[in-house]
Amino acid sequence: MSAPRLLLLAAAAGFLLAQPALHAQDDPATTSHAIAIWGEPKYGPDLTHLDYVNPDAPKGGTVVLSWPAAFDKLNPYTVRGTAAPGSSLVYESLMAPTADEPSTYYGLVAQSVTVPESNSWIEFHLRPEARWQDGRPITAEDVVWTFDTLIAEGSPLFAAYYADVKEAVAVDADTVRFVFSTGSNNELPVILGQLPVLPKHFWEGRDFGASSLEPPLGSGPYRVASVDPGRAITYERVADWWGADLPINRGQYNFDRIRFDVYRDPSVAFEAFKAGQFDFRIENVARNWARGYDVPAVAEGRLIKAEIPTRLPEGTQGFFFNTRRPIFADVRVREAISLLFPFEFLNQSLFFGLYERIDSYFENSDMAASGIPEGQETEILEPYRDRLPERLFTEPFVPASADDPQELRRSLRTALELFRQAGWEIRDGVLTEVASGQPFRFELLLDDPTFERVAQPFAQNLARAGVRMTLRMVDSAQYEARVSNFDYDMISVRLPQSDSPGNEQREFWNSAAATTPGTRNYAGISDPIVDRLIEGLINAPDRPTLIAWTRALDRVLLWGHYMVPHWFLADTWLAYWNRFGQPPVMPAYGLPFLTTWWIDPQKNPGISR
Image 1 (tube, rainbow, N blue to C red):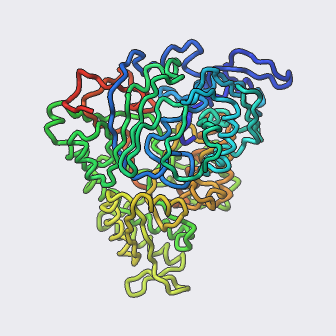
Image 2 (cartoon, rainbow, N blue to C red):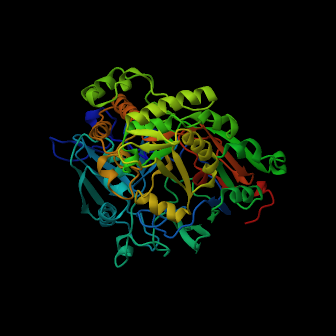
């Protein structure tokens, strides 16, 4: 899952279940307050509050955050347009995750779930107190309408995510059943719990797919208070929110108002933050972290810097090739270009040696492939040996880095040989296709000026091989439109991963996603082996098998050279103005600032909202 966590309570898999329900004797079912993929839920039905919250946290105040792109819609679930930051705060999902355990969800709009031993369907039993912000009850009809609408008109993510759902049926006003096409997709009950619920009565007569700034009707803790198009959006806490006293929510959603201000220039945003114009920042620029916070506010303790260890998978980040372009169709070409990326030079000269090199699509997790395949992973890959690179079975994958002159010369020789094998040669200093006489040129599309200083040394190395890489900087709206329609040669991508990869992998790498605009198959991967590996991990019966299938997928993607790997940081760099209270416990699987922190009136550093 890309936003994952939930518990499959199937007796056949050996999970602990509670409160037996009456169903067909040949397919006994169990009802529970929580669902998870692996293991047992941490919290029982007697939950009073989560361990990492302050149940008595005071409410009040305004928190201000920054956002790097303009927006033109308040519906975050469609492809067209750019959604406003925080727009999901308006809605609630069937179930809610916790940040201190992996892959586990608890009842929210749904107070309980029923799962049969066959894993062929799931029923969600809605809370009678669950209400829309206009006072009307949330019904099973709303859930069914939401599911059908998101599949038909929403982001392609939903169709890929829920591909194994045959139908959604309202059993009665408070019960919805999802029927599965297979019983082997162990993640499916869990990810259905993530389904946001939308109000059917509000959307009737409205164009669901339109880019609109009309404040939506939701059921969540916040509603839209004001919109300054292209500049800011403010949410206000719903005073009579129906879910405020649920144990899963106690101590959370403590800010009265949440405002996002748009800063299109990251340098301007950084200076604005240090001037106190907004409150909280996750830093992702090494130069800023190393030198940019040398200001009196930090020395005086008014502005806090913190490095937070994380157990969350890092996913991957890199310059992704668009293999839909003929110029990148040959894996030898992609490998040759990757050989010329100067990571160590960039890390020392720009990043102060603070980063590590990405060498997996599931970085910083036990799903990352390492060494050479063995055991169950070898068994998974063996049927495809004749269609996979022999090196995949005999060599660890190690990203190349063309840095010092000697290493660059070696990389350059290897790259030119790969180009030659793929039908390219140097003519008058220009890499040229032998068959057509066309020069090797491509464009790196960017919307963040920060990456220009990374791309320039890379372009210089490529020029030594006769390759011309040009940089095209566009605004966020144009960038999103072009990326959605796969209108680029190469882009910089960060793909997050969860602690339990599953159905979302279809949208990342599946052949069908390669031709579906709006998906995150940015590389255009269309490979039946990759498709089979995705289905294998989705249908894994246990955690060790999931790990083996995911590592096999990781290895095949790496040796496909679909990206030039970037870098990662195992810790989170955090900076915030010292005006907040926070629980003493930091959860292992997240940094829930917006939900669990609060404004402490005794710690306000002269900022008045």
